[in-house]
Amino acid sequence: MQITWTRVTTADLPVLGYVLMRDDGLGGEFIQVYDGSKNPQLFSVSVNTLISPRTYRFKVYAVDVNGGGVESSTSSFIACVVPSNLAIPILTAVEKQKFTVHWSMPKNFGGCVLTGYELWRDDGTGGTINIAIDASTIANKPALFKH
Image 1 (tube, one colour):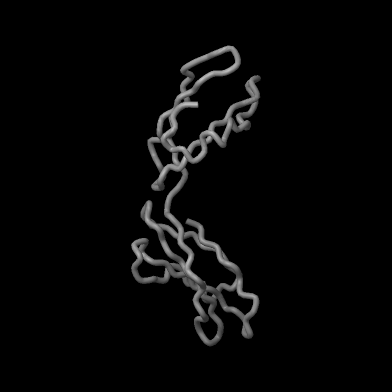
Image 2 (image 1 turned 90 degrees about the vertical axis):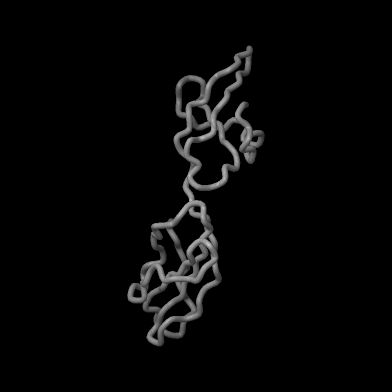
């Protein structure tokens, strides 16, 4: 997971860097996951070894010559990735100006709850698949497998 924060612009003293903290994804105590207290130019860090689908809390603070400053508010993120290993949709019915396709659930949900599907097509001449099909009908309907 890539965590990004905004640089401090209102400090009286020069910022020497930033420290990123996170919990264990179960609401536990915060631990330091990145010490950038000597790198004031870095505002983003990749956090690894997260467990899906836990919700992790993060906070950051700036460091100057006096030490650590006030901690930021807490931000929460679910550790997951986009679903993968989807089977190819299957054509199940053809009429004069419409057809019906079925699809299966992805084999890998990526660690998060499935919230819906997007169905895309080409222009009918074998071009790029870049036309969304009636997204409002199938979005936010994870139990829908036919359109």
